[in-house]
Length: 347
Image 1: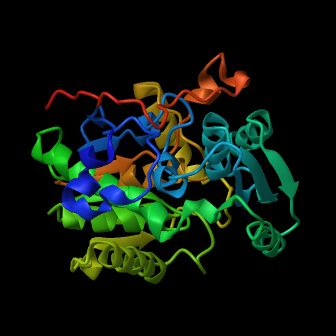
Image 2 (image 1 turned 90 degrees about the vertical axis):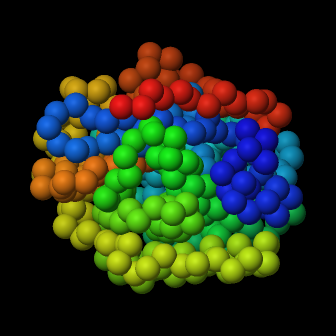
């Protein structure tokens, strides 16, 4: 899409001048899942033909204006999908990639993800702790022609991609792709996706509540933190557009703490059965760190819900299943290529 075609710029025309590289296949589809529960899925795993997921949306803004030969520095745990997708995009754009990673508990998908980063051409810099890794990043980002992308790609500019996603969903609902959900369920890590979606849906006129399912430490994954992220985006939008931007009401955001399994990267046993059902019913593979926990919460909520529950799928597991996944190739649209939106037949 050109800048003027995305929902964010239709809502804020002044943002047409903000640097953005077109990476994604948008809008991503929404599908109703089989069975008796009013459960739908937003297929953000289809945001690229491989290595998709929610990170593509932020990277469109974080890497806007980059040039071949620039160096991208980012940070994350050994099994970070953010690091993997950033490495894939950097390779596609001709950028040098340096990934600073630290150890954490691993599940099978996280271990596979860790192995992909080097195959994608990134230089891996190991750090023993989060603090050591962040200090190392602070030193590297001061060098010339370095694009520093913080943990999860969560900056005000990066979160514009998720505001755009919330507006995208509002447009799909108005077009009849699905009824307005009562709740939208997604995993909560650094909070950028949850914050952007909450604001974008509010700007789009939806009253949907965001249910953010914590996957990391309680200390940083709180409702206060997500609302602080929302205020970061609001300040940026006001500065860029001069418009007054409304903040979503407090009751539009809920943080659910019961699915973290006690540690980042540790699988939650209760999520196994719903995740297996989803794979058998649809072929969608979830990861144990993030999406399986969120889907478990969505599954339970849909059992007692009257309004639709929308699960936001942030993980793309297709590269694990594909026979050609070992090649490390990234097939996404380049900066100058047009994108044909996915079609969806209203139900």
